Amino acid sequence: MSKYKLVMLRHGEGAWNIENRFCSWVDQKLSEDGLREAEMCGKHLKSLGFEFDLVCTSVLSRSIQTAWLIMQELGQEWVPVRSSWRLNERHYGALIGLNRAELALNHGEEQVKIWRRSYDVAPPPIDESHPYYQEIHTDRRYTCCDIQKDKLPKSESLKQVLERLLPYWNEEIAPEIKKGKRVLISAHGNSTRALLKHLEGISDEAIINHTLPTGVPVLLELDENLRAVKPHEFLGDQQAIQAAIKKVEDQGKVKPVDN
Ligand SMILES: O=C(OP(=O)(O)O)[C@H](O)COP(=O)(O)O
Image (tube, rainbow, N blue to C red):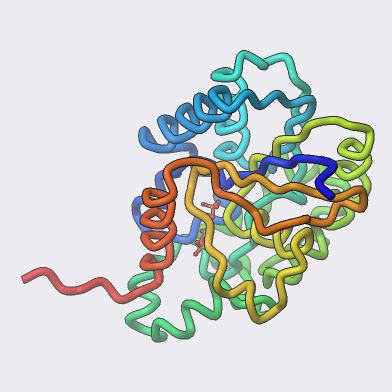
């Protein structure tokens, strides 16, 4: 029986979503469309009467900006916001900054799909010669984490994302939900996939077929043990949502040559 509702989402579109580059731990802001997506998301949640008591975000600006815009539209700016690196996007390692369509051309679409959507394959790790290594790994926000900076990931599979996310879910979010707090999680494509996998019991094989669009709220109904009682529901225009999912999936395909 459904006892609790949880709303999660992947932030609105960021600049590198448009350029089709792996953004991951690079701290890109929302694009103009991304700002609008977050506002629309807030308006939609308001029209459905949602109220929240706690907002959780990653430490990346695009997830925090999205949460603010939603809470502003809801008129609930006063609600506490907690941010943790454990909700960050998956660390895409050496692939960070690379264009997906170019990678598909060089390595094949199947390999790109495995890197993007498989459960236990991690991309090659980032090293100090990578153009975004310094920007990410010397950033002050990662000196305030609950693990030492040199223990932070240098690349992650979805499985590893779930392993670093679960302690935060179990210790910081789940107890609040069980106290009756209504929680909004503003996160990323792959950190949200990892949590959905856990809560819905999606198999290691089936998770490859789950992709999240930007700026669309995902509703989960949970039982007293915080297990999903039914599959998650995307809130909004279902046709538009399916088109947005296909657009994200197609980012990993070779771009047709313009004639
Ligand atoms: O930064 C990213 O995700 P985000 O836009 O959800 O933060 C990743 O680059 C998403 O890439 P993917 O859709 O190939 O997994």
